[in-house]
Image (cartoon, rainbow, N blue to C red; front, top):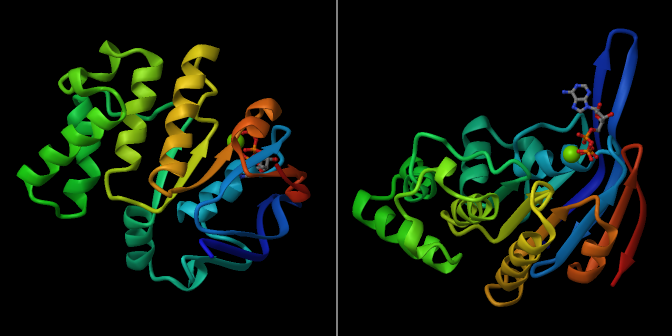
Length: 227
Ligand SMILES: Nc1ncnc2c1ncn2[C@@H]1O[C@H](COP(=O)(O)OP(=O)(O)OP(=O)(O)O)[C@@H](O)[C@H]1O
Ligand SMILES: [Mg+2]
């Protein structure tokens, strides 16, 4: 299993009240699945994704990613998990504006200790693979939204993670560009065998691409439907 969550909770104490961002969630995701995570605003989708990514820590419960319990990891092991096991794609691309496309893609390889020549070659190959071979030295402001998201996807792939987490990856894109980005994610899932967990507000999009749709409400799993 790529992912096993057992009674996973993330609570925030705000003065006298407790926000149950994630409340006793149990679910599993198998290798090679494409899972759509649906739910209204505030239902806990990003909270769940951030826990899986190791960007945040659960309040209670168990979260195994590739068999390792994230709650039991030292901060060092957790940062290795973030670097090696998961690729993260956000709605707002989150590229570094002063760096070129190739530099953005190569950055996390630098943190992972990959030698310069190798990271430059990999970054170039990854940009070519997402259809941006001719945009290596462009900076984010010189790229369209869809192109910026492609750079972000290339960056997410840079340390060859088996799990891709995407939080509203097409939320800022028009419908045609969204289709291109979805085709790219579908390809990464089907051709390269990447497991994909994608948050979206768009039920039609989820139905079209996901093998399974998990719908959340108030921090809980409301339903799970196999497509
Ligand atoms: N750092 C925080 N402190 C307190 N409450 C938080 C914090 N982060 C999230 N929450 C609360 O947790 C709940 C779930 O938030 P989350 O961001 O996971 O929702 P979401 O499903 O991703 O929503 P959206 O579709 O709007 O992105 C919300 O009620 C939110 O206000
Ligand atoms: Mg969110």
